[in-house]
Image 1 (cartoon, rainbow, N blue to C red):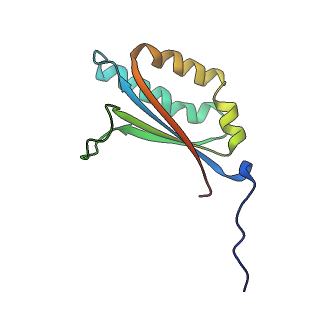
Image 2: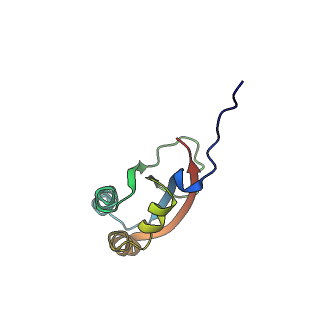
Length: 113
């Protein structure tokens, strides 16, 4: 009986990059909508970004610690994430984000799916 082969090469694993935001209380819904559009547009601007999904929290559990929006970016691999972080398009997005951001939470993990 053959055992299933487990991937051990980290660079072949997808990277899931989870980003949660809390916006300043005076941030308008139009500003948030514009920011979301800019964020989703990064998928087509930065190589190695396979998918960006997310939106406003709607969990009934009330465990979001004040963070209001969550986004998941799927990268092709670790190299794609390494390219994304300093990429000029990402830096431009961060410049747009900072004036309306109160708090942020980021966590990444490797995924074989």
